[in-house]
Length: 101
Image (cartoon, rainbow, N blue to C red; front, side, top):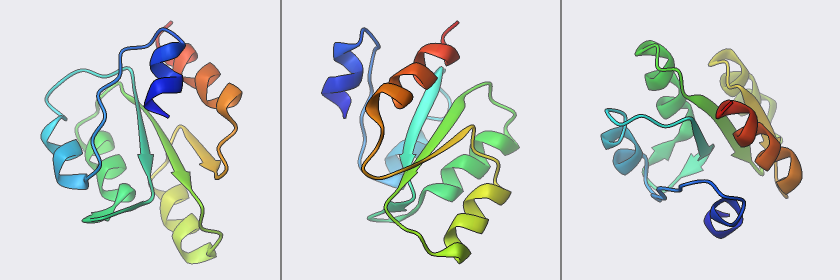
């Protein structure tokens, strides 16, 4: 996914763990793409942290889950977009482009 996004002309910082992503919240990002299930937690925590800090970052959550409990949790945290896997790449790229304009 990083290669697809950078190939579309966007700068990418990729991390694979929730703790690493949380450490980056002091930096400015136009958009964050976060998977719901991460090795050390869930992406909802990152989304909630972005919202609590009133950051202007667009948060896109991706998931392969269809469990209503988790989906309700994500929706309650108010992502800018929720994409199901396999991710619709053109839609994802358009959302990222929209966040930079």
